[in-house]
Image 1: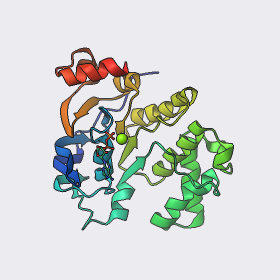
Image 2: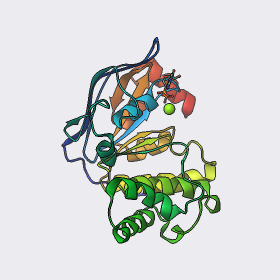
Image 3: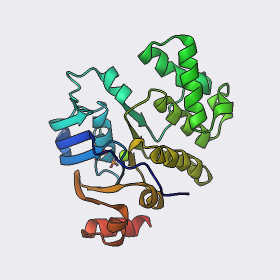
Length: 252
Ligand code: ADP
Ligand code: MG
C-alpha cells in the first residue's frame, strides 16, 4: 500500500478548453477547462448528472462536443475529422459495465480489439493479450469464459483489453460501481498499480478513500462545470464551495 508513484512528466497529454455540450435544449457541459499531464492520476467526482461521463466520452470521441477544443497528445479531437480508430489507440476507456463478449474467452476478448485495430500477426497479438492479462493478475485465465469469472475478474479483463492497445491515457468511468462490495478492492488494486507505474489516468469514481490515497488531483464537477480542483487532501479537508462540502458529507 505504498503511496510512492512515478511523478508526472510535465508534458500535457489531455487538454480541454471551454468544452460545451448540449443534449437537445439541455446544456450538460458549460465550458470545462482541464489539463492532464503525462503520468498524472486525476479523480473526477460529482453528483449524478453533473456531466462526468459526457466529459470522459468526449475525450475519446464517443460524444461530439458543441464548443471548445480537446487536445490529446498534441492532436485536436474533432470526431468529424479525426481518425477515431487512431484516437482510441491513444485513449483507452473502461466502463461501469464490462461489455465482454460472452461467447469469447478472456484471451479472445482481449485479442479481438488488437486484431481489428493493430492488424498484427497472430503470435504478436497473443503475446500482447497474455501480457495484458498478466498485468491485471489474470495470467491463468486466458481460456476462461466471462461466465466462469467473477465480476471483479471480468472488469479486470476489460481493463486488460484496454491496456493491450498500449494507450497513452486510460479513462475509467465508475468501473467499480457495478461490482459487489467484496470485489471492489481487487479492481482498485489494479488501478493503483497502473498509477504507480506511471500510467496517465482519469477516473470518475465514488471511492473517496481511493481518490485521496492514489490520485494527484481531484476535480469536482457540478452542474456541467468544474467548480473546484486541487490536491485531494486539500479539497477533502477544506472544501471551498458549499457544493463540495455537501457532496463530501453525502458520500463519506
Ligand atoms: P454523470 O456521469 O455526471 O452522472 P452524465 O454526463 O451522464 O452525468 O449526464 C449529464 C446530463 O446529460 C444528465 O442530465 C443526463 O441525463 C444527460 N445526458 C447524458 N447523455 C445523454 C444523451 N445521450 N441524451 C440525452 N441526455 C443525456
Ligand atoms: Mg456517469
